[in-house]
Length: 425
Image 1 (tube, helix red, strand yellow):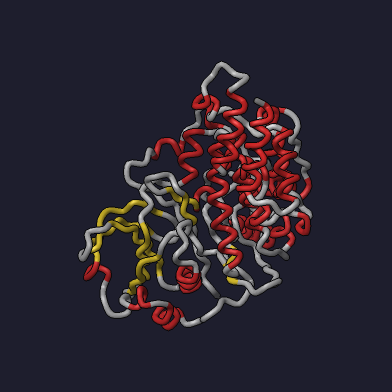
Image 2: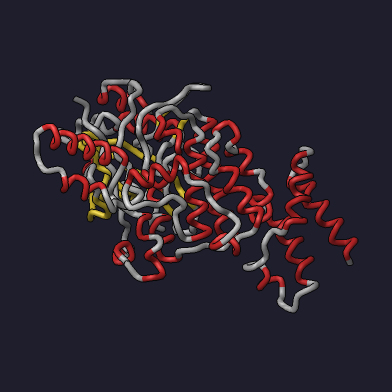
């Protein structure tokens, strides 16, 4: 029987761990963003409960365990697809020069291994320092028997070079474990920042989301489906740039290839995953759940049990016109509606997300500056103050939509905004 890969809970130096357990009113809505319960844990517990019934044991405890479970978790799963490149030792040895040294050297020969900075079901994450350069890295230790290790290493090497993907520096092997030396992201995880801040401005959310979609677009162009997009797996650099991490559930696919198998985290999983047949667009759905949480401070699909959460994901119609959404611009709502559609054929792609007016407005400096200058004429506040509060209005949205639909570039759209600004003077 194949062993299943367990999820991680990575902590970073100087991280306020107390935030993760906070139950204050301002953060209670986000309390279910972090959990150690996954889809595969759920499947195993269901199976255990059935065995209890067969053995004539009392199943009340099982029912209780399935109720009140948090809605998301670190990754814990495997695919029913055949894993590529069986023969872990051989596979790791031939991937890349950067990973071959681990076949000959011990990690202690090249790195000074320091304190534990993270712990999870799979093992530990250590701080380490290169003996040659003095540069610090994170070392992720995976116990042998984890058959997804070679797949994770292969995919990370396949995606290497993109600024939004955590860099894999080297892989080492000893009698018990594999040690993956990776880029250290000292800014911590996006989930921890979200729990502290609860709700983001549209400007900030759009910039984070654009960075994420650029990485997802790159992954899909390279034939990789991540399958576990969530804030726990998004790391931050010291400058605040995002890095996508944890490719333990990722799969390489050919054009048009369908995926099967339960993988991901409950609150972020796409409805088609629950039905057992899906494509790379599951990453778009999961990213849309993240955007929803960034803008509102809550998750869209909730329930008292995982069954209730899954039913909500498959059936509940989201309302984007009242309550918490009244303070969010219509273009932002339009984007999330186009992402969180259960009709996979009409769900927006990563490329379409990046050309959406809401994304362009908040991430293309020329467009946003022109809008702020125009609005500052009718406000007493200076443009610097309007920067934090200005939102894309409906007229601007229609202008952007019309221009983009005709194939116009952001630069040409900016010129159109500039011309309108001159006429208004």
